[in-house]
Structures are given as C-alpha cells and as structure tokens.
Length: 396
Image 1: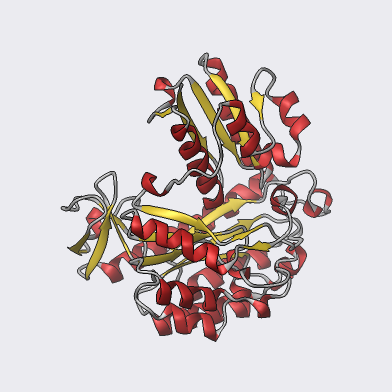
Image 2: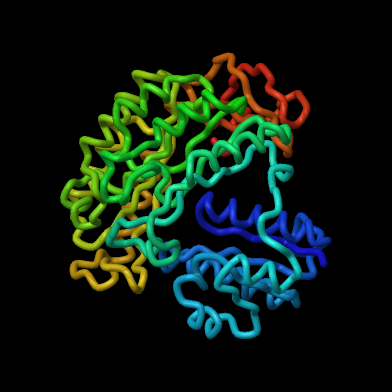
C-alpha cells in the first residue's frame, strides 16, 4: 500500500504522523510524496479551533472526492469520534494511532529517527490548564511529563542515527516536571535541558512553543548555551491583561516582557516569535491597541495571528460580547501588518551575519535562530558556514 499523510496542527501532531509513518513503513507499506501517488490518504486532524476542525474535514472530503481511500486520526476523533464519523461519511475514522496502525497490520513503537535530519522528541503530553478558547485538554488528556531517562534515550537515538538537531515538543512543553501545568513555579525544563546537554552528544536542541509564565532565570541560564537554539516561540495570545484574564491564560503582560528581556540578555540575536488571537469575546479597541503595542515593544521576529474561532465545548463558545467577524478580520490584518514590519526589522538586523546552518532534505539550511535559507551548499545533515542574505530567506 502507498500512503500519504496530511498533518494539521502542532508539532505533536507532526511527531504522531512520523511515528505512524514509521510503523506503516516497517510493516511493508510505502510512504509517498503526494496524494496523487497514494492508495490511502491519512488525515491527521487538528481540532484546537472550529476553523482547524473545518480544514481537517475539508481535506478528508477532498481526498475522498479524488477517489482515494481516506483514514482520519488525531485530535478531532479523540474529542468526538461519533461526530467525525457523521461529518465524513464513508471515511475511516480512528480514535487512536494504535487503532489505525492495527487496521493496516502495523505495530506502534517503530523507530522514526531515520525519517529526518531534525526530529521532534516528545517530552510532555496533555495539559491541565482551562484556557477559555482551547479544547486541547479534552483532546490530549491531563499533563504527563516523559521521564528524563526516556527523553535522554530518544535524543541519543537521534544522534546515533545521524541526526544533528532535536525539537523538544509537548502540548505544554515548558511544564515538564510540574505536578500540574497550573503550577509553573515547579517547571523542570531547565534541569532537563542541562541533562540533555551534559549526557548526550546531540548538536542542537530546539524548543517548540512555550508558555512565558514557566520561563524563569534558571531556564535562561541554560538557554545561554549555544547548543540550545536561540529561537523562542511564545504562546502570548493578547497584550491586554483584561483579555488574558478572560482567556484564563495563567500569565500577564509582564511575564512576556520579562522573558523577552532575559532571552536577549542571554542570546542577543535570539528570534522571538509569538502566537496571538484577535477578536476574543469582549476585546475592545483599547484591548487590541495594547496587543499592537506589546508586539512592537517586544520586537518579535514573527507573529502568528489567528482571528478568534468559537469552538463548541470551550468556555469561550458561549461568552457574551462576541466580536463581529468583519472586525476580527480587520484586527487580524492590522496585527499581521505590524508583524510583517517587525519581521523586516529582524531580518535587516541579521543581514550579513556569518553563522552555521543545518542543511535539510530540500536543500535549504536552517540557522539556530530559525531562519531558513536557500542556496545552501553541503550534504543533507551537515553544518555549513553561511553569510545571511535577506534575499535568501524563505518566507521572508
């Protein structure tokens, strides 16, 4: 069987897809590069918002219309299996990766380190937070930290398989070591990073999305090590304290600015990127203006902007003072314009720097602070010296 996986959502979903692909390949199936070549299309769904749910379902319907056998997995069926079965009639829907793999005669647990030069390594699963807009707690269950020795073993496997970089992933990554994700002072992420640097030979450690409330001085002391990539993606969501409280985010604006200050103190060329939601219920023009001001004060290198999408089953779904769709789109456009300006400023600050970049499968190379460059000369998986030219940046 030839299969293609279309993945939506976070890096945890990417890791889940890599594991499923490895299991299927070990069972004798072949992963192909496009839906056109595939006998079976797997859709690894995201359900964090109503819009992500719709995108996942559209992908399943599109593959079905093309005459493909379609199987859906991921967070959508985890949250509501029967609703997904009704919504995509005629499509196979699986509540777990184990069930899907079993259907295709594959056993989970296959090594997937050979699939990439950079490989995600899960260090944490689930979340206990009750953010008003988020369904992930239902989809992924309660917080669990992966034991340190298991993490170290996974990192060593990547290094032994020729990988140079690991991307530490989790649903609430920075909460590693906490008894509950609602207790950020217990975060042991700094201790885990120290252990990885001390006890493995991996060349670079990259971190996926982080909650600013978990990042303290101990973290930034380790972040100063050059084997830790100088790129931090912060889950910010708003620059208004009032909106953050309505969202039940667990942090304020001060934590964001403090994290940015400490990050630049440790690594002056750090790329700080962030997620923002605009048009949350009750967000007024002044609240939105505070978000614009925070983005500019911090000087983020890139913004990921999302109009609020009401998700049934979340606290925000039934909140009063819903912002009209037109206003949400307008605010998203305004914040995105600020983001493009900040991106240009950051790229100009990097122009002409000589750095090392990791050559990827597609021939591009990625810097420690997450700039992807065209025209790299070198073998896949090798480090090459490059002089950053803004014109070579992919997606600038």
